[in-house]
Length: 368
Ligand SMILES: [Zn+2]
Image (cartoon, rainbow, N blue to C red; front, side, top):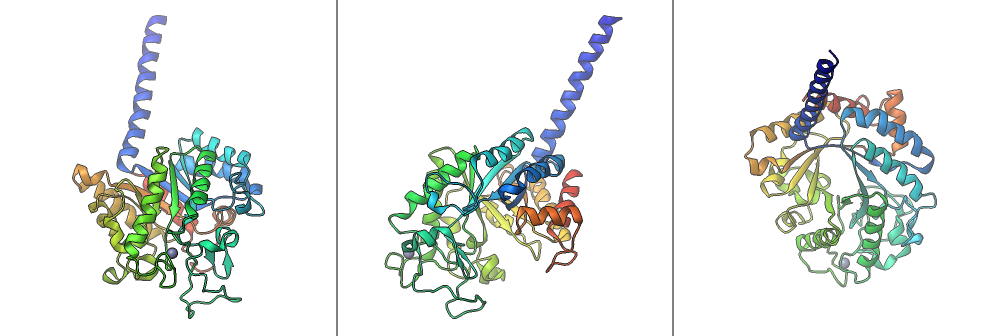
């Protein structure tokens, strides 16, 4: 009797294990990347964010967490670039441990090339190293408004400044080591200032070549430590032909860079107003692509249907380029968690909130 029971137990354990393995394989094969992108929390919110990872991300089968860190880390290589309040190594290790125990790949982001300022605030890299400014003649306004005479959206660094990469690469290496990761997100979205006529290094140069050159340089640096590069996709789309405009796509001739960059880069293809089909464009260029919604649940669900449909209906060569979905949140982690747990309305979006979108899209992913 005992023997039969043990035999039965072994079979039961085998089948339970096999079913779990099959379920995992199945969702990974249907949608390899199931991501969530948000600003890294502040030190005081680390513990509640770790709870959020355990209680909300993991049960929804999120397997990729992009954290926008920028200067919110106590860099040892360049302490002068730290924010006044910044995450310690111990803070980061709490996130790393939570992600590891839930099989979530964590990818830190530091905005490179563009987004070196916001409104009238210059960020740390150009504050400490003003010589890297692509447009030093553009003075930061006391009160920012758009449009403005300088077409100032965000400052960029000059990708051809000879002293720049030593510093930028030290930050990349340090933040990737801290997060113990094999991938880095370099941002590189909404770059309006590039190849400026007044820049002694970039003036007259092809802006697509400049953009592709900087992407490739960062990619090649990461390759030295077997790490992959992730970037936003907007600079690689032709804003005029597609009608996508100058934020969601490029008006400044960077879009031809799509044919000049390494193929193993992950393109984060964000569209918030319509389920644009640009994932096909990137996949057909041989690039990996994830589609990124923000706060509109019905658009996000359409995008998910497109992505999973494309994986089902493509050739094996194309299928592997369609990598999945990343929900993007443009607030801090704290305000997202407040909105999520209190089910608040969005100041601009009303009922369309990033937390509803997150709930909506992951409810659909759960049904795959
Ligand atoms: Zn320059």
